[in-house]
Amino acid sequence: MDIPTLKALPLFKNCPDRFFQDLCATAHIQNHEKGKILIIHEDPATRFFVIQHGWVKLFRETPNGAESVIDILPSGHVFGETALFENGVYPYSAEIVETAEIISLSLSVLKLELEHNSILTTNMLKYMARQQRKQDQEIEHRTLQNASQRIGCFLLQLTGSEYKTAKKIRLPYDKTLVASRLGMKPETFSRALGKLKKSTGIRIKGKTIEIDDVQQLTSYACQMCSSQFPCRSFSRSTSLDTHR
Amino acid sequence: MDIPTLKALPLFKNCPDRFFQDLCATAHIQNHEKGKILIIHEDPATRFFVIQHGWVKLFRETPNGAESVIDILPSGHVFGETALFENGVYPYSAEIVETAEIISLSLSVLKLELEHNSILTTNMLKYMARQQRKQDQEIEHRTLQNASQRIGCFLLQLTGSEYKTAKKIRLPYDKTLVASRLGMKPETFSRALGKLKKSTGIRIKGKTIEIDDVQQLTSYACQMCSSQFPCRSFSRSTSLDTHR
DNA sequence: CGAGGGTTTGAAGTGCATCAAATAGTGTGG
DNA sequence: CCACACTATTTGATGCACTTCAAACCCTCG
Image (cartoon, rainbow over all chains, first blue to last red):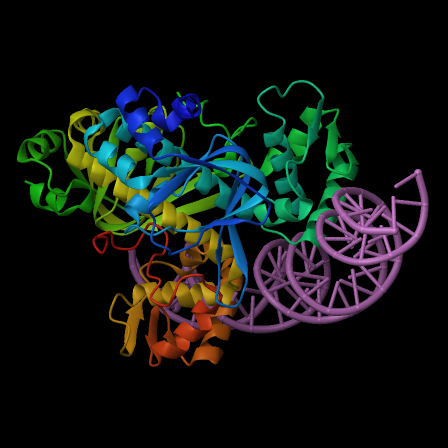
């Protein structure tokens, strides 16, 4: 059934077929519309999730309604699995932000496997270490970069690994959501994008953005970063496969 | 020799004596003065470190000299170990900020042990999951709390787990450093602390701060947080022992 | 006592948030 | 295919929080 998708996940790399069979025996695949809440912060967890298609926002809410976006994940990403290490409750809420196909899987099967499959635990360690770095970098970005630079950096992530040539990219979800992902208000995003346009010569048409001179964008956005240019380690939502 | 310190680390909980012996065979203990740089971002890593005593700042620097503080760790904490998952280079620099006694240990011994000691890998997973949550919360704090609230939150962490009664605490390092730890400038810290004083009735004498009404401080500082009061999960520098 | 770093204070500037309103875009039913 | 309703985005005006630069103050320690 969905074995191929699961087998392709870096997290499950080199795991035995038996494990995939166990996992798939518990799998549900569901299509969800924008707005659907999948898990709620602090709720007891029995399942974790893999995104087949679409985008999912991870976030937390304060008593007075403010929300803090932890990440926005595309297909190929896993979430909810860390409940295993958090006393069995989800450490965040998750909401569909672009129509999505989601595989849900049993946490207890994963837990059991972690107890005696050292390949899986090693994968998990790498995966978490990687996330850790991305988090560090996220804090660095919020601290050192201004709004326009953060947007520039975000756009560079979207261009993928081929960064020499001109690019035409498309925002994968609403601008308002990009704004919250980058820790700013929609109005600020709009203005900062305008400023970025003036400074770097990018062209904007709705959700589509054309970058003729990637180098120029880079020197504008990446000057405040401790990593060299193709920093390509933007939060959790970048490819995991590049990790050796 | 220093086996007792190492055995007490949550990370090494329940590990076999043989492992401690291997580890200790490679151990160096050194005293360092304020200002000493222990490791440098991107340098190849062969050792990791345990803080016996003192405080250590983890940070990264940008080409143009700005620095981003990742964390400031007290005794009982481990750093440099994640180089194992980062292609063997340190993901940050580390500097002594209060005279310290540091144990340095072989990374390869740790690596070897991780390959066949599932207790250790489980500990490591828990430890990393915990750090992950703290990072999430750090971002939330920076996004939702203002300067005074962040300071209030920081002070509450210093009060420890007994949070019912009045407290007299002492800043463990320079105010300038607390400021950078909290992502603000020294001047902002000074002014924000003044504001906090007015709003919550705390008393300040140099590095010493007295809190008569912990409840008042809490309701001031924690109102923007997604976690209930004793959130006690401030970055990486809080005790790890409380984790079940 | 004097030097030097840490801390505070003042004045002025910048960036982002807020509130309010206009505009562009999208999907719907006729 | 058009008009309407509703949402996303932009724009304007204004305010507040934090930063910056500069100078004073204060501690500590030789």
